[in-house]
Image 1 (cartoon, rainbow, N blue to C red):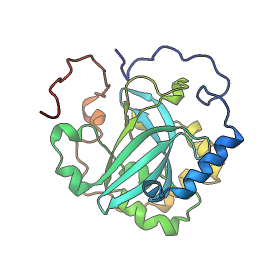
Image 2: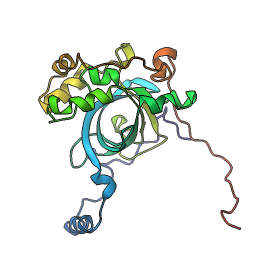
Image 3: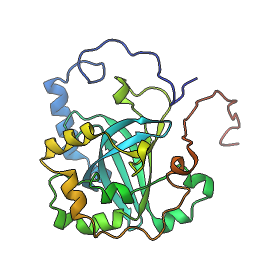
Image 4: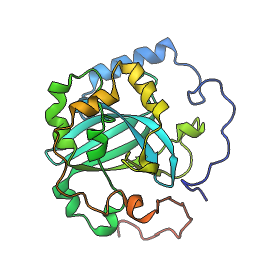
Amino acid sequence: MASSDKSPEPTPPYGGEQPPGKPMTMKQHVLDKGTAMMQSLKPIKQMSQHVCTFALYSHDMPRQIETHHYVSRLNQDFLQCAVYDSDDSTARLIGVEYIVSDKIFEALPLEEQKLWHSHAYEVKSGLWVNPRVPEMIGRPELENMAKTYGKFWCTWQVDRGDRLPLGAPALMMSPQAVNLGMVRPDLVQKRDDKYNISTDALKQSRVEIDEPEWISPQADYWKQHAKGFAVDIQSSEMKKRAPFP
């Protein structure tokens, strides 16, 4: 069965990076514009931030990807992110990340905490950026984000060439200041060139952002235990009880 630790069967040949399918027609564009005008799309309109950062596969740490999080806030302690592979109009939805405050994280069961990662280093190092937002405006949010934890599931491994979302989801980890957690310089430089920023300069400007007094050793589990997590999909007996008499 499928596993996030194994490559699936190759997809049918198709030019470019987009998934197989016919090009959009003018009629389809018009229909989409019309329905967008008539429907509220309330959850989408709650997305108030674009974050560009990097993520590493829990089961295969040398594999690193640039990610684009589109963030909505449900309350002061809980955010949810649709994660894309770029900020282009043709960007592919590759996963979802949930972000919680340290207060919520510390109340989670210990086994659950192993699936989460911290954000302190990611923010302080300048890797976590809000493109085109001046640092002075984004500073309060950065200070809050440095004290949070995230759980990120990747459902489309485009970096291995998948043209469709295939196989099991993969758990992702955040960059860290240790060997396997360091993001490749070429990835960072490519991102910096695109947005005309300097990650090193951002790092210097964030020196005074307070780090959490304590980061749970259950988060970033691989750092302490040299163990990652992979998802295996197995067949099981169906529950056949009817939902009504």
